[in-house]
Every structure is written in C-alpha cells, then in structure tokens.
Length: 236
Length: 233
Image 1: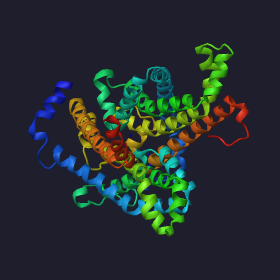
Image 2 (image 1 turned 180 degrees about the horizontal axis):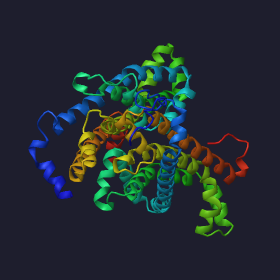
Image 3 (image 1 turned 180 degrees about the vertical axis):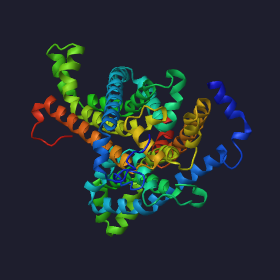
C-alpha cells in the first residue's frame, strides 16, 4: 500500500493537468487564504475594539464553545445543500462558496477569542499610565493595547490557519474543491494507496503552514527582542 | 440506500418532497438512527478513555522529566496540526481499515488537550499544600492520589469536556473508513441528496455532544462536593 502511494506520488501525471494535485493544492491554498483574509478584515477589528471597550466577552467565549460542538462535516453539508450550494465560483470550484463560508465560520472562534482576550489582558497599569499621559481612548487603543495584544492575536491566527486548512480538506466529502478529493477518491474507489498519498501531501502542507505561522508568531513577540538585547551584555 | 415512499401519498422524505424536517423519517428509520448513534457513542467514549489512559502517565512523565515535556507537547501539537481527513488514512498502514484506526486517531487528538490540562492542573497545586502533605508523611503515590489529583480536578475536567465535545464532532470524519457513526448517515445523505437524513444526523450529533458535556459536568460536581453551589470551571 505504501508502495502504491509512492508510485502515485512520483507519477508526474498525478500532479499536472486540470485535476492534478498542483491545481487542487492551489485551490485549497486560495480557499484558506481568502477565508482568513475575510475574517481578518471583518471580525478582527470588531473583536479588538470590543476588547478595548471591555464588552462582549460573553459573546466571544460562547462563539468558540458552540463552534466546537458542531461538526465541520455537517456545517459543510448544510451550507452546500442549502441556499449557498450549486454555483460554480470561478477558481474556487463547485461548492466553492459554501466551503468559503464554512471556512470563515470556523476561523472566527480562535481569531475573535484570542484578539479579544489579548486586548483585555493588557496590564491595567500600562493602560492607566497611557491615560495619565493624556492619551485619548483611540490613542490608548492604537498605540498601546494593539501592540501589546499582537502576540495573542497572532496565536489566534495560527490556530485559525490550522482549523481552516483541516476544514478545507474535509470540503472534499461534500464535493467541494481541494486536495481532500485525492483522499476521498482513493478510499471510496478502493484505491487505498492514492488515499494515503493524498493524506501525506495534506499533512505535509499542514506542517509547513504551521511552521511558517510559528515563525510569524515568534517574530511578533515584543519580549523576544528585549530578551536578546539584555542577554547580549550579560554574556560579555 | 433506496428511497421508499414514492407511493400515492408521498412521505415527507421521499425524493419528490425531500423536506429537511420530516417526522416520519425519524419514526421509519429509528433503527438506522439508533445504530449510528450507538456506533458514534462507542467510538467517542472509547477514544476519550484511551486518550485519558495515555495522557495520564505521559503527563506524569513530562512532569518528572522536564526535558521530555517539550518533546511530548511538541509532538502532540504536531498531531493536532494534521487534518482529521488526512490523519485517519495515515494510520491505515498500521491498523488497517477498521474502527481501531478511527479510535487511535481520535485518541491522539485528545492528547493535545488532555496532557496540557493535566499538567496545568497538577502545577496549580499550591506548594504549601504539597509541603504540608509531605510533612505529614505522605508518600509520592498518596500525595498524588489524595492531594494533588483532587485539587487538579477542575482543570482536568475542563480539559476532558473540551476533548469529549471535539471528539464527538470529529468522529463524523470516520465515515471516510465507514466507521463514522452519525457521519456515515451524513455521507449517505450528501450522496443521495437526502435532506431529512442530513438534518437528523446533524441534530443528533450536536445533541450527543451536549449530553456528554452535561454528564461530565454532573460528574465534576459529584467528584468535588466542596465546590457545589459555586460556578463550575
């Protein structure tokens, strides 16, 4: 079976062509990025501002709790068979719009919760000091809270990326686009080697995405820079 | 699955009508629904119990040997990164196409949450409490069992609830190997455009998650009678 998978992976014909893995990979990356950008553009500013106001925490927590109990699979089906299904959405393929909406829904909880909590958890002493210096509410938000909340916000983004990539894979179960099709086609047509090969590619890309976002997360940590600056003289 | 009910009085789940909400579907296919729910429940419960059985020694080991902690947490995070639709196929060479594959995959997913929460729960035990117990002559085993675990219960139970609710949702993906419980009905429903079946399976799935969460909440209250009356978590 692993040999079948290797044969599948090393055959260039499986990568190229209109239904090849490269096209499917691009489709899935496009879906993932679009969903994340949409959520970032709409929900992130709202969550951050609610954190600044200190309101709506109940909402943020509940969104993430409800999201956990509802199976991705069911959401995808309900959206694609319901009103959002059937259209072909350009490069997003069949069931593209339904998939996109489902992805955005599943990207919401980690992004909303983490950015909200990130702003809320900013040290009160720091906020008070900023106010004492005569900063307006907007200035406190823009110049103090936003920057200190950055690490947690980026962590939320990372969690969302993992979730969205996984959900985009599952879209294949509902005739959606993406690499999951290689897996489902393999298993439902008794070509287990192909299913395994698809799983390897999906998992590998997931790990690469996770690695990249871990790097971004590391870069977004303001403490890290200070640590390094302080560590240098201590060594000498 | 063939669709019956194309008779003179077409039932609400016949292909020509195909309502989302259909009472006679729930009655006529009660057997199917029950069998799928039982399979779903079995897979979920066995996976979470297996995850718990592995997470406990793993957490104790990580606590004892600091160097292992980074490795264990890193590895479980890596597993968590892999989409479920890919993780199950990746296990097939080891376990074949069976319910075992799904159970092991789901148990691996619970490890991320369980190990973290068990560690956090044990860490949160105040040092004075631990010292007092040692001063009273408690050995390592008794300290863990009689002092640390009871105090860590709220955090561990919170982790167990999150793990259980996520496992119920993830079990549906087991339908890729035909062991998905209610997920099998979902897949069948999407293949045949069978709306009543899809809605019924989705509703049962969410209900199952809520019921299990409620049971765990009740268990938590039972385990911690001193906390009764306070807000949980």
